[in-house]
Length: 549
Image 1 (cartoon, rainbow, N blue to C red):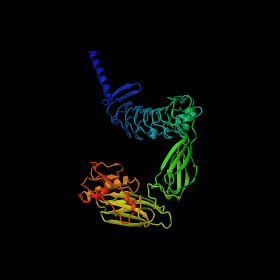
Image 2: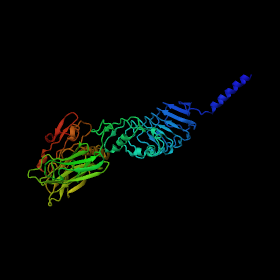
Image 3: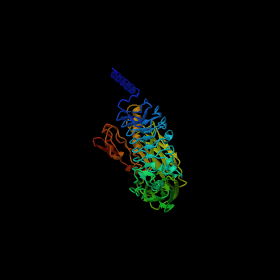
Image 4: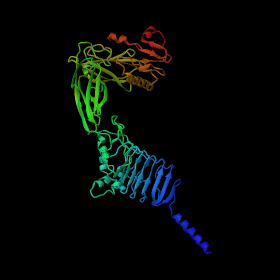
């Protein structure tokens, strides 16, 4: 009877003991380790840290879960937690207050997540942290004061990240490193300092010089997990070990040029050169008065490790291109500028043909563009420059045969805009800009065709929108080329210089005959092609005026 009673007592004690133990999360396992109770959750759909974890856990390990964020107060009521492993999840964001309520935390492992940055001030509330594992993330920046709150940290793993440049000050501000510089501290504390920096895309230029010197100077009291740190850039240093490379001191760009004053004749090609010597390599940009209107090719290349040359090429220089061209070189240290003066003089010979803009016989400069669509029309913008005192005004012609419309506007030189409103459907318009009272010449006009009226204002606006947008896109071709918009589904030829209205069912390319217009406009030919491959020209239309459309 006594033996039965003892057995019953043991069962009661066993059940009472297990009843006092906190229950484990579904899908997770709980166990007792030498340091305390452990929670382990592996490969379960855990989108956030459970909010009802008991305080008794000393170690929490959650891995291979779709854990995206560690919000503020993620570990409330876990003040005794010492080991936190969150490896191989999808952690991308850590709130600066995520580690609150973890004053006893000694080890934090975040390997294999998606972190691009770390809120380093979050470690202010974890003064006992000794191990921080951040390898296999996407961290690309390490601030100089990143380690200032990690006062007892002795193991830092930043390997397999995206660090390119790190200041030596990061480690000089590491309190553990500072302690070993103090006399009388001994090597006991310092011998446990472990650092992992390998497998990062290091850019070995002057910005990394201090870190390279730091790595070369460390002794056995600081252990590098992998001492073979390799440069990935620039090309001249790629593949070199830190211990082998020699880096120069950083300096702001110093700019020079073969000639600060360049003189050419109208129509000649000219190349302006700017040489910048700097470390790290500088970025070079050019500024000049008409940069919004006159875009030139710029070729920038490295001639040596610390030397970069930039060349700006002006094809067929015009008088309007005269002026100051500023070369601006900048890097992380500073910026420098150099001004090159270009003087374009009149040539005895005629200007070069086939210019993209419109040089007139009087050497005025004209650049006419369609820049946007308005509610009922388009907006023209142009740059016009007269090169003699008596040439002080320009004339803008807007003509349409179908609408019996002709507008003449007299405007001074400079940058101007003009809205062309109340455009009619299925109509060809031509806008030309000429000097004074001279007739317009080739290269000073833009031509556009409006779409068919789709029945009502809404349809008309839609067709005008399509037409004008096509004109804006296609006006990169030499000025004076005819630009057409398609009507309905079709297969247009390249560059939009041919349109394709429905064969014999839609208005074809209408002829244009401007009164008082220069005879050179007769050279223009508008070619139309429909989806079946039929082609019509203005000459064909003149022969078939009696046909039904």
